[in-house]
Image (tube, rainbow, N blue to C red; front, side):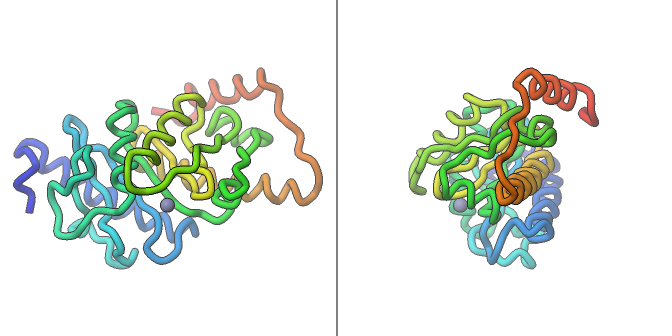
Length: 227
Ligand SMILES: [Zn+2]
C-alpha cells in the first residue's frame, strides 16, 4: 500500500525505509532498548510525511518492508501495520522544527535514570559541550495520547542548544539533521549519562566554564567532521 505517497516521492520513501530499518538495528546493538521499546523516524524531504517503525514488532522483524509512512497528524499513509505509539510526538517535532530530519526515542538505562530524577545531565565533559552545547535538559512530565509529549520536546529543545531532551520520568528524545544523526545523539546521550553517573560515584564533578563550552560547541559544530 503506497497510494497515499505522491509518485515523485516513492523512490525517496523506499530508500528512507531501508535507512530507517537499518538504523533501528543500532538501538539494540548499542544497548539502548529492550523488547520492542524505542523508535527511529526520518522526515520525507519535500512532504509532510515521516517514516517510522510499526508498533509492537520485534527488532529482528524490522525489515524495510515493515516500516510505515505517516503524515504529520500521525495518520498511517502507507504500510501494513499500525505505527509506533510515539508517532504523534515525532510528527509534532517535524511540524514545528523544520530543520529536523530525524527523531529517536529510547528508554536507555542511564539517560532514563537521570530523567527519573528530573535532573539535567551537567556539562562536565568536553564531549557534552561538543555534542550538546551545554547541560542536557529535562523536559516536562507528559502523558502519551495528545500533543503534550511533542510540545514538551519542542519547547525544551528550543530553549537549549542540546539535540537531546530527557522527558521527565520517561526517557530521552533526540533530534538530528537526518535519522542517522539523531541515532548518534541517542548513543551519545546514553554514553555521557553513564560517564557522569560514574563520576558522581567518585565525588563531585567539576563544571566547564561557559566560555569554554561555547568554544568547544562552535568548533565541533562548525569544523569537526560536519557536512
Ligand atoms: Zn517512551
